[in-house]
Amino acid sequence: MSRKKRRYGGFIFAEITVGLTIMAMLLAAVAFSLNGMAKFNRYQLVRQHCIAAAQAELDSLTATGKPIEDEDFSRIWPQLNVSIEKSAGQGQWQAAQLVKVTTSGRYFRRQVTIELSRYISRDEPLAEGK
Image (cartoon, rainbow, N blue to C red; front, top):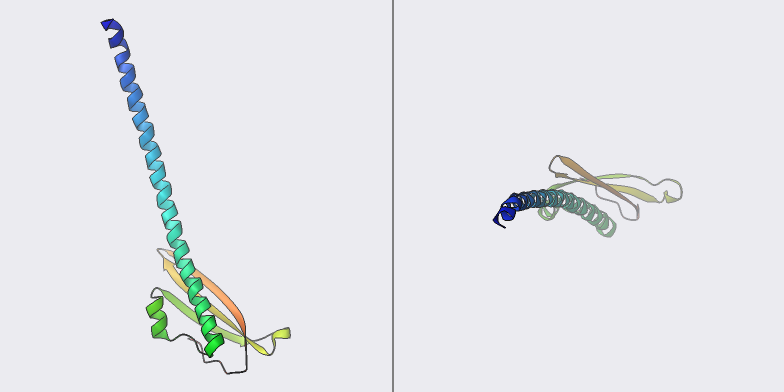
């Protein structure tokens, strides 16, 4: 009986070693995929901030005729840049002005740029862009 125990003792050790190795590989794969998802979520957060900033600029231009003050913009969205471009409306929109707001921010080495546009009535003069 002792001979039989000795014969299978190495098999159990090898089985445990292989099992632990497979578990370590699975844990490494899960950690790697979670890191990738965290990076993607941070990119999406910068993108969402760009959209919110551009929408706020368009709303400010529509409601007041002026863009958000530079100090307020940099206080709310410190890592973002904004530019505003105005042009005359085309076709059925000749009575309005086309306003394009471009916001951009950095996510590590990647540049995130969002451009939103809206036609705004020319009833009140628009202030010059940033």
